[in-house]
Image 1 (cartoon, rainbow, N blue to C red):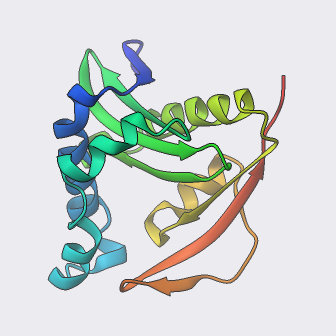
Image 2: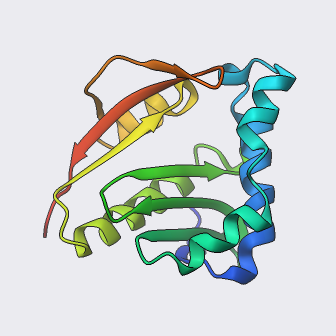
Image 3: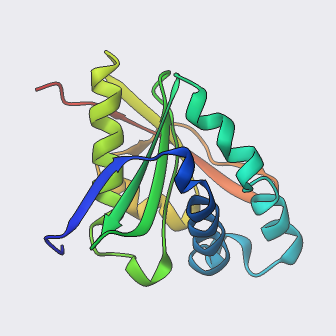
Length: 160
């Protein structure tokens, strides 16, 4: 991966770019999940607005990070203090370059700092292989939600 990649905690000033990263990642990068069904895409992206995202920054149970490549935002992820990775989105043109991995590793470090020993998430079909490469394993049957399939996955966190 590029040496100039770093992750950091996101701030309210990042809310606009976070919305754009999430929506672009869903619309372009998650086509195998939504199959360009406009209703499914709309259901998935309707709450990805600045107004919806801003409260995340004041919720102490949430950790929202952003990946910067040469100071340009290229990815975003979020976890909660109950051990759940809520999401990890990367701009499609930067897929498979270590950005998602860096974001998730940063989230996992925060979760360990919260005293947690396990992480869990619901993956889309698009994200399943990515999460498997990071050590996550399915632990229950996939289920349908809002026109998408969610695969429950979990991983023990390595405490160093």
